[in-house]
Image (cartoon, rainbow, N blue to C red):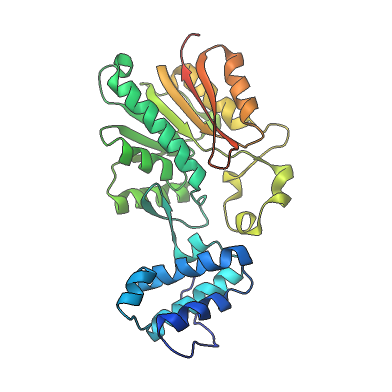
Length: 307
């Protein structure tokens, strides 16, 4: 739902000073989980004002009627269960402000950890002879909003970065994010499950593919199931590793160069299976499961090469 032509409804704050508007907004978020209410209120206040709380206090800010109207509309959309990133139309990822909507997954902090790990692998390759001659090439499968591809380009400015995605609407979003961030990343249409190897292999292959089994749909928050694309979330219960098998096969058949690195975000209960799959293939070394900041098995990284 968009806020176009939608007007806020009272009750309104008794004053337009920040010390009154802030608790008023907090009180308007009555249907938001209590643990999230304060954080969301701060996020809305900073976004609509364009200033931090400290700056608003120092400047003795007075909120305008149009700003109060926006806050009221945004609060109601949050009460209706819409993700705050969709309400604001943007999400921050690895220091980048990216546009998001219901056509793409909302970038998550744990995915930033995969970006950081793979950027480290890339720099290690670039410093050694493993990268070889020519440009350092990176591909992000299932790119969605383009967050991973763009963050890697920011961290690896000299690299050639490609984002691949089958959804046309997601590709439009990714291209728009490339334009708004000024990062030179190419986005192209491709279906991982029916992909053929490129004419030239990549040094780095990264992906955050769909990985949630259909049977777990009811365990997810409605903000996810009602507002994010199903095709980017769910996989069949009888084949939960379908995208990981496709990634491994694509890399091994010419998508990734020998000595190159593959990094994949995983379901926390499936990371060990993904790692075991790579080990069993016999073509991978340094297979490692990385834990996220919550201590959960989250990513699998591996180097392509003879054991």
